[in-house]
Amino acid sequence: MKNLSKAITAASALVALAALSACGSNGSSPEADDTAVAAEPASDESLVLYSGRDEELIAPLVEQFTDETGIEVEVRYAGTPEMNALLLEEGDATPADVFLSQDAGALGSLAKADLLAELPENLASQVPAELTSTDGSWVGLTGRARVIAFDGDKLSADEVPDTVDALVEDEWKGRVGFPPGNASFQSFVTALRVLEGEDAAATWLEALAGNDPVLTEKNGPTLEMVNNGQLDLGLINHYYWYQLAAEQGAENMRAELKFLPGDAGGIVNVTGAAVLAGSGEDENALAFVEFLLADSAQTYFAEETFEYPLVPGSPAPEGLPALDELTNPELDLSDLDSLEESQSMLADAGLL
Image (tube, rainbow, N blue to C red; front, top):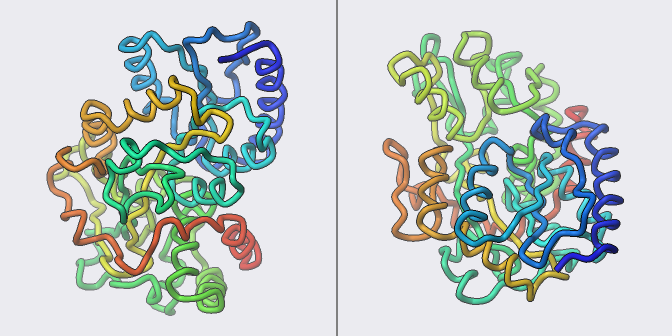
């Protein structure tokens, strides 16, 4: 599929990515900045993947896909916000065939810009409607619930707020931490705007910023601060706790989790995959999306990251609340497409 002009385009795009990444990344793998562009045109049995998820997680899946299909995958890794910005900048000239996003908001913004191909029905319909796109422009892969991590040595679950609205009260001044540059946090802000309105979201962010929050770089360090007793409350995705508990033993965890069903702060966002508009007929690209929806990949995500698999029949990690108890029926994930507006609102509040 690739020819020389496409390889040249890839090189130009990656120069742009490097410039974007230099401006700041919330979750990119260090290796991403060092990955060289393939100097030779790729063969027909290949595809270009832009991954907004970490190399440590995705690389084994890519290797398995290549082993099973013979299709080589040229991968670029960076944070989802950076990949989203790059794809919007490249437009139809992007060398990417597939985009793997860590949240629905970035996928929605690309769909809104008409940069995504409509997926075949046999792929788009594999995931329940409330956990994927409404127009087939992308498909959900895994679910991730927003939660409050709290210091279990200082607080009981009953003392932890049931809503994010309570976090701006004086009681929690200087006691709440979160990574404002993280894609999942920004999607939560978008959900807050969608569910409670623009004015309410702006007011909440201004109040939160005025309550002396502890700003972090990523979800992992946020949880570690809670687990070390340095922070009382942290806004993170649920699976970070389960990953740390798998390493340390749940009985050794000081941090505990509180799920917030029904609240904007407890939304279930999804990771997802999309095929770029220029690759809608690319069999290799479609094969990769199909691979990500298959049982082996769904199980891999559940076992490696403790996220909810979204294809029915794939078992969720043990110990998690049922997914249908957490999904918010009032929220259409396709509405999480206004990422730039959320980033602007965060900047206006002084949080970015």
